[in-house]
Amino acid sequence: MTEVITAVEAVDVRFPTSRELDGSDAMNPEPDYSAAYVTVRTSAGEEGYGLAFTVGRGNDVEVAAVRALAPLVEGLPVQEVLADLGGFSRRLTGDSQLRWLGPEKGAIHMAAAAIVNAVWDLYGRRTGKPVWRLLAELSPEQLVDLVDFRYLEDALTRDEALEILRRAEPGRARRTAHLLEHGYPAYTTTPGWLGYDDEKLVRLAKEAVAEGFGQIKLKVGADREADERRMRLAREAVGPDVRIAVDANQAWGVQQAIDWMAALAPYDPYWIEEPTSPDDILGHAAIRRALSPVKVATGEHTHNQVMFKQLLQADALDVLQLDASRTAGVTENVAILLLAAKFGVPVCPHAGGVGLCEMVQHLAMFDYVAVSGTTEDRVIEYVDHLHEHFTDPVRIRDGRYLAPEAPGISAELRTRSLEEHRYPDGPVWSAEADA
Image (cartoon, rainbow, N blue to C red; front, side, top):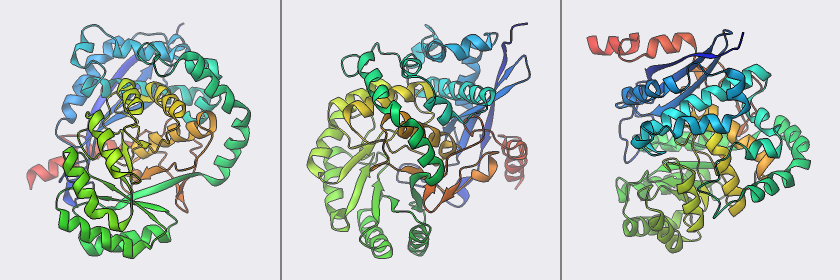
């Protein structure tokens, strides 16, 4: 009997991070880190898990978007889906009526990401491999078959993508062994949340250096004098050799970003992240020209591979920050990694949130093994909270991500965490409503 996908289930899960101001920044002062949590079930009793990350209100909209896509998936033969994951992704993003809600952006695109990632998780579990390794062991031909080149060919052709992958192929085994032994470089945002006081900032910055991190990140953009003070304190705490990135989370206009960063320049910021609207490609290019050698980093809110293509074509960024669930999951991120490799731009994925560290490590490690072949100037963001809620949480040693060994994409929530944080009826939230 043919195995089919029998259900795509979505649950509204929220964590009350606003209570301690974890995750606070200039645009998101009191976020409750949340997830539209997806389970894909098959007639053989197998499951795959994925999610789309949000910051609280609106997570119910994300769950509804997943449920709207579910009928496109339920009933499909599992083997046919796994044999053509590029086609499966296009099935979700190309539905003629649901596509109108994007196209390929916003809640509907993130819902596709959650489902796509859940199916990759299912694939990894069936093969007994973590997704980074599953991807890294596919042939160049199989990998390019994942990519929809229709809107990319003016910047990246199928043949160019094949050449990138074939050039990296001979070193895959060596890099896999190195990754398993040494892990992948990380940086931490934990010290830098905007709601933390100066004492906490300094203490956490020193702890980060002691734990082996060579880069930290501070949130900026709400108060210029406060940003100058916090940058000075952070630089004094970590010394001259540790990189300090700063992140404005889209708070500024173009000229405002240039002027504000001039005030922070004496403290040697490594990059400015999301200095302005994530949709303003030319604005990012202007900021980059004005601020060099300070780097411009962006991408966590970039809608799709076409926008990444244009950011690269316009010389608008120095660091590409793809996200595991903003674009259409693993499949579209393969295309984005190939674009970055074509333009020679390092990828430093956006993480933190709920499950983003867990999922995005697979993309960066695949990139190292099978695409770019390097970790030079590449780091994965790390934020030290909410990992205890996952069955296969990230592991950090000496400021580096250790490669996941369990099958799948590491997105499965613990049963108790899922039950306690369901919104609005889980005990965490019902207790707050009764208070």
